[in-house]
Length: 204
Image (cartoon, rainbow, N blue to C red; front, side, top):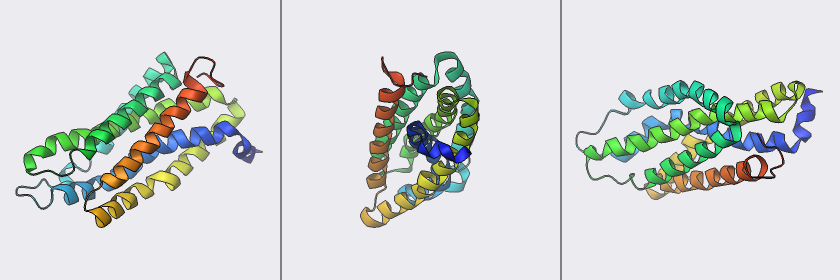
């Protein structure tokens, strides 16, 4: 009975949106130490990756309840639009900060990384709010579980792999980061078309 949700269009749209938010959170949590080491490791006085690895996940976890409050007040679709704007902006900014010439440039780099965690943390709550509003109670619970599982399998697991392959192939994570930017743009467009615009199919 619960598996009937896989036949619903909005199950898959919400899965894409949650994959791009929670998947970013879980994937970047795993990838951040390696990213710091690969980008700054060869510079004098390079930052210790493990000293900063915990900050991003903490920011994402702490901001999630705020995302819930904002979604309750302003609507899930409104907040999700903001989320993808943050993810697009911070990830694009990060691409310009991955070829540092001095360790002092780490601060801006890490702020951009934290921007990704900030957006993803808020998005974890806003997309869940959308699911609760889109589906009836019998469907919402299995949809929540399905989207959470798929988020890790479809994106969270592959974020570190894609960043690693980008660095191995080009010496820079930018190839993977621009791919993430493209995915966030898709997420923004899906949210805009189906949930946010006037006359949307499922305004939420």
